[in-house]
Image (cartoon, rainbow, N blue to C red; front, side, top):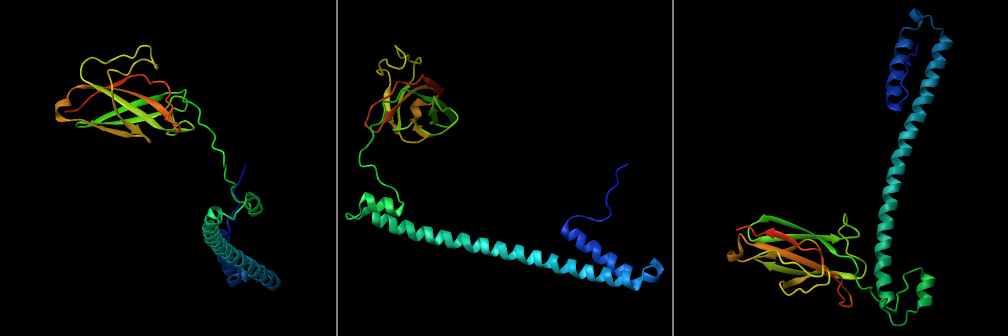
Length: 229
């Protein structure tokens, strides 16, 4: 049958336990059948324990203080370095060889053309506010993230209000004639406001990505929602 040791292992708990044990054992040594040698050795080992236990606590406190001081020193140094690097990067006399020697960023002087977007925005419409729609959109290739595709500056938002939901034929490349341009949203979500006369009508949206060169990707599927009046 497994039994639990009567002495705790945790430092703080053991320190309190041994202090009580030693005090009682010394005070009642005769009744407990302990010799003077037993008591002397017990007291010596208790003092040795307390010395090292206190030393560990002091070392931990010193480590915490040193770690905090190190972090503050690193933060201050990094701030100073960033300030200097900003000036060095903008100086006309700074060469790429100097940047390499310093271990700082070597700027790309040749801009890499952005690819024409091939994915589409996925649209979710929040209709909880009166005369306002909040459009959340994400890339079809990364539907669980808010990030836009690489090289994309935003999504064109097009809307049609009232009547039957228009279709785009063929899908993704058809005419946007039934829709009116709202704006280019550089981040999600985007808000679309309506006038009082639009309350109760259906707003249909279609979006497409636009890259840094103004090239447009395919059109998204149409998403429709009622305008709260």
